[in-house]
Structures are given as structure tokens and as C-alpha cells.
Image (cartoon, rainbow, N blue to C red; front, side, top):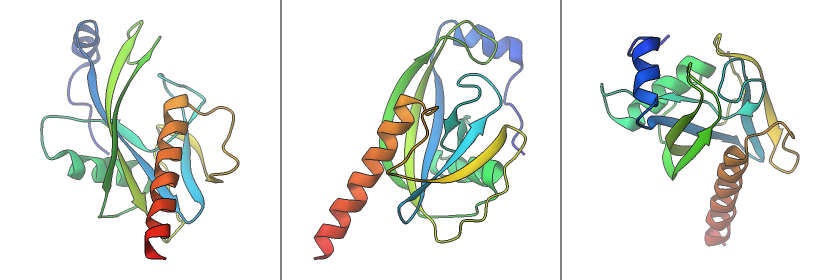
Amino acid sequence: MRARPISSELMKQWLEVAPMATTNIVVMNGPYVLLLKRKNPPERDKWFTPGGILTKDGVIERQALEILEDETGIKACGLSLLAVDDEFFDEGYGTEDVHLVTVVFKLRVFDKTVETNTDHYSWSWYAVTSLPLELNPSVRKWILMAVKEEVERDFKVW
């Protein structure tokens, strides 16, 4: 499991003045997307894509793959950049508010085996046509972007 790069107190001080860099991965298996239910703020008890905090120790794509493996047990390669997004949360990481800047990737997998870590208490493969209501609006947007890319890719094959 990846260790937190700084103490909670230092993180709280940082988040009072600056955004946090994060990554999320929209993991697709055919018409299904992998969602994890979060245990911790921000977005406690909501479905989210696998993701986490980026640190200064390496390439963003490599860190995204490490976070994916840590959170889901999925070992993968071949991420494709989907978006760079930002979002504000009223609570999270020990502060009253937090601003996240997120690098979002897409990944196609062919195996539905998942083993979550302790940051989540549930996971599910959801059909992209029936996403849960407890879904962050940004995550919904990322999933729709990924589906649009998949459809456009399939039409180019014709």
C-alpha cells in the first residue's frame, strides 16, 4: 500500500492555500465501468472511480497504475489520457474544503477480478446505462466521456 507522502497536519496546511494533484482511472470492461464505494471524505459513501493523490516521486501514468493496483488489485498498462479536471469539495483530508486537480485516465480491461483495499468497502461493475445515483457528478462526466470515445473508436473501425 502506498504511504501518505506528508503528515495530516502538513496536508491540512497545504490544502488551505493550494489544490491537491490527484488521478482517477475510468476502468471499462465492455459496457461496464468499475466503481468503488469510498469509506473516507471527500465523497464518503459515494461511488467513485479508482484514484488517489499524486506525489512528486514519479511519472503521473506510473503512479496512476500503482494506485489502481493498490486499490483494486488490477495490474495493467496502456492507460489513455481522458481529461484534466478540477473540483471543489466542502470537506476532505481534515480540512473544511479542498480543491482537487485531477488527471483522468481511461483503461480497458478484459478480466473483472477486483480486490479492494481498506479505502473502500464495496465495489461493483456497473453498466454504463444504469449508473448509481450516489455517483459524483465529475465521475459521471468522466464515464460519459470514456463511453463517447469508445463509440467513436468503434465507428472508425467501420
